[in-house]
Image (cartoon, rainbow, N blue to C red):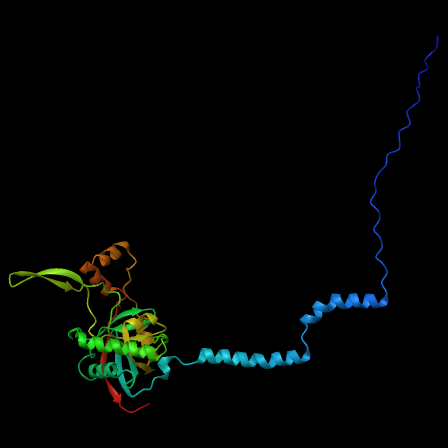
Length: 304
C-alpha cells in the first residue's frame, strides 16, 4: 500500500509583474542654432507688444490731436449760442416782495421774427408787468403770461410754424439743450384731443368739439435752467439770457407744490377728461412764494 505524502511546505508565491511608468525621457539636446530659434519664437509675442520709438512718437503726436478734437466736439456751441441777437429786453423780478435782480434777454429778431415781436409787445406794454411765475420744474421756470389774452389760432399756428422752422435750421438737434433759452409757449402736447359734444342751436342738435384744458395763448414764456428738450414741441425760441442767470437760479430754488401726476386716481381722471384733473395739474410745481415781474421793457434795438 503506497503511502501518500502531504506537502506541508509553504507554497512559493508566483512573481507578480507590476507595471511602472517609464521615467520621462530627457529632452533631446538642441544645437545652439535651434535653441536660438526657439528663444526667438517664445519671445515674439512680447516683442510685438512693445512699440518701437517711432510708433511711440507717433502715438504721442496723435493723442493731443485726438484730445483736442474731443474737446472741440464738447465745446462746440449749441444752436442757441450761434443765433444773432438783434435787440435786448429786461425783466426785473421780485421774490416774496423782495427785489431779486434783473434778467437781460437778447432777442432773435432775425431767426424768430414773429415770436420776438410778440415778446417785445408784451414787455413794453402792461403784458408781463406784475404777472407771476407759475411753474418751476427741473430744466426750466415758467411765467404765467397774460391770461386775459385770447388764444387766436392764426397767431399760435404762425408761432408754432416758426418753432418748427428754427428746429430745422438747427439741424434737428434740441433747441432747448442748454440753460438760458427764453421761449414762448405755443403748444401743450399733454392736452387730450377735443371731445365731441352735442349742443342745441336753433332747435337743432349739433355736434361740436370741446377742448378739455387750457390751450396756450402764446403769452406764457419759459427760461431754461438746463437741458429741456421736451420744450422743443411746446415752445418757440425768442432769445437767450445775456445777464441775470443768477436771478433765474434764485427763482428755480423757490419751494413748490408737490407734483402728484403719478397718482393712479389722477391718471384715470386725466384719461377720462375730468376737468378737476386739469385744474389740479395747473397747481403742480407752483411756487409757494410769489415771484413777480415788477418791471420790464426793451433796452436797445442794436445788434449785439
